[in-house]
Image 1: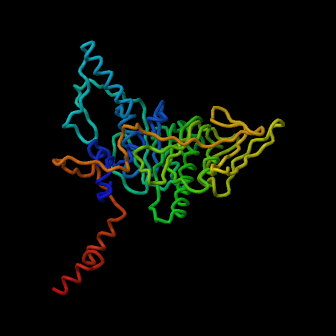
Image 2: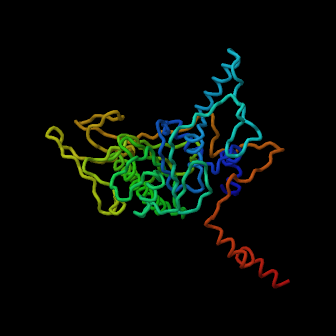
Image 3: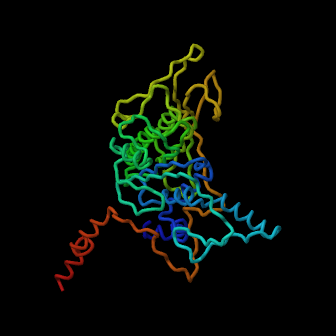
Length: 387
C-alpha cells in the first residue's frame, strides 16, 4: 500500500491498515466471495501473482483460521447477540483491541472459528513475499513450464511423484490479482493484462479439478467479449464482477469462472499453451444443430455472441439461436465505503503504518540511484556544490 495523497484519502486504504490487511485489495476478494460464495467446499487453492499477499492473507484467515467476514460475519455476530439476550448464552464476540494485526482474537470471545481440515494454499509470484500462516510461497514465473512441478510438490510434498503424468489431488480454486505496471497507454495496458490473464488461465487448466473455479483480474476494453467467449468454452459459467472496493474510475474488473469442464480430448500443458498455436478440440456438431458461434454489435452498442443453446444462463432466443452476453455484476453491500469518495477524518486520528511493507519493492533501486545523484534529478547535489 502506497502513501500518496490519493491513498491517504482512500477509505479502504485506511481501513485495511486498521483491520490488519496487507493491502486494500483484500476487500475485493472478500466482496467477490460474498457475491459468488467462492470458498464453499474449497480446501486447495493456488494464488497467482500473490505479492504482497493480501489475497493469500484472506485465504489463510478464512480457510485455515476459520474467520468470517462481511455479511456472514455480521450475521454470526447478530445471532450471537440475540442468543445472549434471549437465552443468556455466551456473550457476543467483541474484537480485542490488543489483538495482533493478523486478526488474532481472545479465546474468551463467544465467536468460535471454524477452520477447515487439510487446507493447502500455494502463493506464486516473481517478487518475494513475507510468510503467512499455512501458505506456501514460491518465487516462480507462471509462464514457465517448470512452475507446474514446483507447485504440485508444494501442494502434496509427501505424495508428489515427478514421474506421474496425472495430478493426484487437483486444485479447487485458482485466483489471480496480477496486473502489469500500467503505462498510461490504455491499448498497450489492456493487451499486456490479457496476456497475463492467459498465462494464469494456462496454469489453471493444468491443475484445476472438474467443476473447479477460476477468478482473475481483467481490464475491460475493446473486444473483451471475445475473452469471455473463449473462457466459456472451458467453464460452465462465466460472469464479470466489479467489487465496490474497486474504484469506479478504474477499468479493472474480475472474471469469475465456475464449473471447469474441459472439452474431451484436451490436454493442458505449459509447453504448448493456449494462444501459442494450441487449439481446443471443437465438439462435433449434431445433425439437429449445425450453427457456429457468431458475433454482432447491436445498434445501442451492446455486443451479442451466439454460442448455440445454453442451459442455466440468461439468454434470449431469436431466429432459432441463443444469444449469450456475459453477466456483469456489482459486488459489495451498498452500505460499504465508496472507493471514489472522500471521507472526513476525526481530528485525533493517528495515521498507521502499512501492515507489511514491501520486502523488495521495484522502486528500491530507483530511490538508491536518486540518493547517490543527490536527491531529485541531482538538484540537491548541485546546491551543495554551489554552497
